[in-house]
Amino acid sequence: MATQVDSIRTIYSQPEIQERIKEMGQQISSDYAKLEHPVVIGVMKGAFCFLADIVRQIKTPDPLQIEFVRLASYGSATESSGSVQTPYLELPNISRRNILVVEDIIDSGRTARFFMDYLKDQFNPATLKMAVFLDKPSRRVVPMEADYVGFTIEDLFVVGYGLDYAEKYRELPYLGELKLGGG
Image (cartoon, helix red, strand yellow):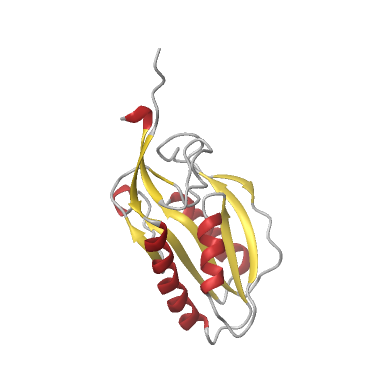
């Protein structure tokens, strides 16, 4: 009995991703040039590659404070479950700070909207912006727009560069469309 193998078609190569992140870093650096004590919050696990690369491109007068949360709405499925899970949502007191949330993807918008509302309610930030690696507006069910977008993609299931399917493929240095079982 032959085993079906997943196939992955490259959408954005590693050099294309790095070039776009460099451009985003320049824009964020410009926007944050006069803001004191910026806090960057990475949403794990999917944003780990993007977060590592983007913070190295951001140049600000004050050093960045980097924090992490873990939110999820996919589990091991290829579509959002519709509910936001918060396995790790501990943050220090970052009240009235300049906060930049770094997310892997805005799909339905539920997770991003939940977290942005949470930050506003809990910490009353001086400024609150979001940088996302990917925006998939065709899937939006909750109004949500990021301030900085790496790439806008069609309604594809993508993996690589931190994004996964059932905890697989995060390590790929490129972004690809996943076809299950060789489909």
